[in-house]
Image (cartoon, rainbow, N blue to C red; front, side):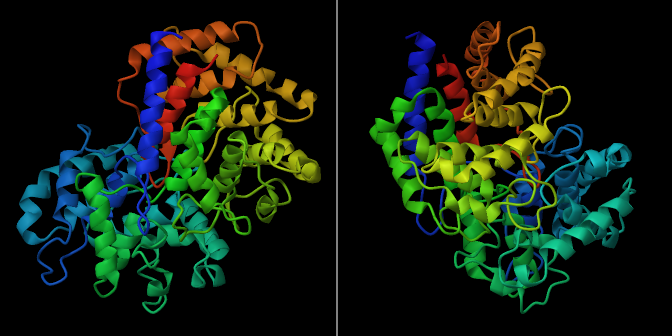
Length: 501
């Protein structure tokens, strides 16, 4: 065992201990980066008893501390547009006593948006609910006297109307629509009597800080919602993440990465504790969402990877629940989805192949396989709606196809492996914008499924790069309402890659 491998093993123990500790019944757990988009919504809430004061002044402080030199928040372009719009609305909506403090940051944000929006294209942008969030923020700025030109704005409005037709109605009324997560875009048009019925007993709306903040602004003061938001602020130095909780997601993805290179880890007590929590929270009838405290529609992605992780830990479960997500062409994350996910279909395929009674699901295995192969681009890569880097989608799809019971399907990963080898940077890393430990980890974890000449050498060069750059800042690459990072999930991928053979 090399010194780097030994250190990685120690770090794995620490990581599993953190995942095991970070869970509070009635609140949840999971570690994410802070979201400027959601924090912008929080910074607009006024105090319960004094409308001339902010209810969450630390949110404004967080925004002012984290503005980029360009005047934006988050990034890179175009992923900085929505968080910057949200922050600008907050800065221009502050009480009179704070206007002087916010004037220059607001001016810089407006200059950034004025210069960059002409390059924004609806056809090339993807973030959760952008088709309803963008018009809402533009309208808010219009009311503040700021008028920005958005290219193809009519196309965004068309997408918004399509989404509302598809996901509102009875599903929303009964709390079963993914639109609850984007409630901030709807509070101005929904009945005030309906909105409280969408709130969870914990105080949040769709596990979304932005949606919860917007409801708090619109409705009579709700102390339970305020407490939930303050709890999040205490974990994020005044800001809030893009979603909370993520304990199911964090545990399942982390175990999946770690067990893919070290199945024996499942026998270790720290790992067994996390596995036990997943097993206890698994719902064989509805499936699972990203949190144990489940107040959001269940989805195929989380359900599939929970099942796959349990199988990898030696606890296979009949994956029949996945049939509720089956569509004509593959598997949807949830009903009325605009565009299906590559990673979700890959995780469904993996769960079906690894689960108990796989022979009963041959037609579904074929369907998910066909979906993945049809979604592959001509260069051998995949793109996914949940991650900005193609290397994540390539890892998910290649791993699922490599595990396929038909060896002929496994051979079809070759073009994707060749693409990875060709795209490795001269320094040994992989990365869409620059070399990153996370993306290099995905490439390494993909290459372990290949015997293609050069794969092992590329893997070793990638590991050497991660060892040298382990402490470097890690970019936000996961797609939510803005880019974010599930910190422990990324760490698990990196540590798994360092242990790969």
